[in-house]
Each structure stands twice: as structure tokens, then as C-alpha cells.
Image (cartoon, rainbow, N blue to C red; front, top):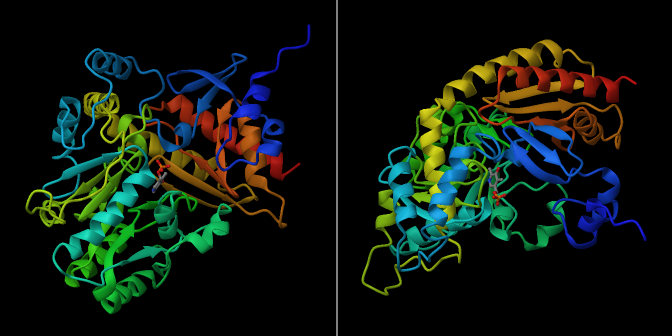
Length: 431
Ligand SMILES: *Cc1c(COP(=O)(O)O)cnc(C)c1O
């Protein structure tokens, strides 16, 4: 009898993986996950990996959390899904009620979707229609920043600053006004000037507060976010905060916006909202924005937008329990303590390595930028592979090594991540 094909072979035969070259996929030793337990993932051969990237920035409390599993089962006994188009669902109402006083948005109204990118698209359409509903025309451009990433649908891709091979889609992108990443010298002045000069054609400014994750954990000063908010308010331009990556505790507060002291008109949530369990995202509009859509029944002021799985009840039930657990377990205090420990450990053991150019960190979001001496050396990939061999799951963004442990990570796990990173970087860069 012929050998049965391996899981990797079966995978490569039928599954198309995003951001992955499929001709070499099987040769790059992908981890095929079968189960999760706490902060570990377990592959089909029983190998355990510490999930140091939170399954690409989603997982907050861990995998197979009994309390979240139970919330899912409880909702399953009621109903899995019912449409939010014109009707409601108790699980969704309870979630929105619980989130409303916690989000940094005045009079928060929640429009749910399933992915971060879809919630960004909703924000774009809401910002545009906010103006047309008030008979203000010509407000159809957006100001976005250098290094921005807002998702991979055409609209969200247009807001993003490219990279990761997405330049191929440039002919499909709509033009946006772009000023430098807010951490760069002179960037605040450039943004404020652009808002003043283009206010009459701007629907909104969109930014990632505190951290531009996908650009390699580029830090965005809180004061810069506040300065943009002031300029936007002065010139009556809407502000959209994309907290898909930073939301739900990653930076040490429930939302990064809290550290900026501002109240955006629209907030975009995703990734950690269900603790990494189920696809759910939300576009949160202020009462003022939402109010511009009120009018006669069936009138053209209505937001004509919706997704089939908008406000999925299973996802909403898990998201509600997740929010409660963040409080019950005092998760944010752990984030702050572990973040301090991680920062100190990296400064001591990783920063001095010759191959490390710089380390950027905000809360439990870390980018370690390597400086390969020659084009094409691709250290990022190799260092990540060396970490995976040591049982710590890491994935790079180019030559930036990203570490983003779950919010419930322990002191021992932080030590292990630091030790593993130092050993892997040394192995690859100082052979
Ligand atoms: C991941 C991400 C998105 C896109 O979310 P998806 O769920 O992957 O579509 C948007 N904005 C930011 C800041 C992100 O990190």
C-alpha cells in the first residue's frame, strides 16, 4: 500500500494560503495545527509551540479558554446566527451595550462585520455619506499616512501605503492624500497643513493610534494623534481610528486611543474583539455621525450597506464574555507588567546583538528590526524559522521580527521568548 499523503501534502494540494507562495509552501516547513491549549498550539505530530504572535495578533486570553468555550456553547444552544438587516439579536444587543461605555467614541453606535478590512470599508462609506447626507458635496478623499495598513480589500488597500508585494494592485487603488508616518520629524506639521489645505475635499483622516502594526510596529506618538484630532476638529474633517490591531488591550489600555486623550468620530475594531475565536469586526460611529443618517423611512439618507454574517450571534456571545474576562482577570495589569519585563529583557539580551538595528515596542507589541548587510539575505524569515525550531511561533514582517504574545502570557513565557529570540538571531546572523 502506498504511503498516505502527509497533512502538508494534503494542505498544499487544495488550500490556497494568503501572502504565501504556494510553489514553495510545503518546503518551508509549515506548522499544521491540530489543537490549542493555553498559549500553546499543538501540531499534527504533537509538537508544541508557544504562540508568540497570538495567531497573527488575534489571540488575547489564550487558546481553548474554558470560559469562552462555554459562552460559545451557551449561545449555540440558543441560535448561531440571525440577520441584522432590519431585525435584531439579543447576543448582539448585549455586546453593543457592554462595549458602548468602554469605547472612546461619544454616543457609540455599532455596525458589525466579520473582518477588519470590511469594517474599514464601512468606515469609508459612512464618512463619505455623512457629508452627502448633509448636502455637502466634494468630500470624497481621505488623508492616510506613510506606513499605514488598513486591510486587503481594494478600499482598505487604497488607504494603506503598500508593501508586502501589494504594489501589483496599484492600478486598482483609488488615490488618497498621504503625509509621512506620524513618528517622523515634521510629520505632524505636514498632516496639519494637509488637513487645512484640503479640508473642503476630505471626508476623513484615518490613522492607527500609537502603533502602525503592519509597517513593523512603527510608533505613533500620542501627542501627534492629538494634534491631528485638533486640526481635523478645527477644519471639520472626520477622524477614523483604526484599532483593529491595537484594540482590546495590546498596548496596555483597552484601546490605544485612551492614551491619546482623543475621541474619534469613527473607530474600527477587529482582531482581538472575540479574543481570537471567531471572525467579528465593528465600525463604531459617534452619535453625531450616526445622526446624519436619520431621515424618512426608505429615504436616501439610509446606510445602504450590509454583510451576510454582520453581527454573528456566536461571535457576539464570545466577544461579550471576552470583555468580561478582561476585567475579571485584571488582564490589562498583566499586560503592563509583562510588557515592562519584555522591554527590559529585550534591552538586555537582544538590543546589543550586532544584527539588531532597532527595537520598537508599545505594550505587548514588539518589532525587532534586523539590518542584513546585503540585499536578499532575508534574515527575517530565517530568524523566525529558527524560533519555530525552538518551539516559539514567530512570523516576520520583512526584516522586522514581530513578537506579540497573548495578553495572559506569564513571566516564564516572556523569559522564554527573549531567550529564544536572542539565540535565533545569533544563530542566523553570527554563524
Ligand atoms: C489586520 C488589520 C486590518 C485588517 O483586518 P482583517 O481582519 O485582516 O481584514 C486593518 N487594520 C489594521 C490596523 C490591522 O492590523
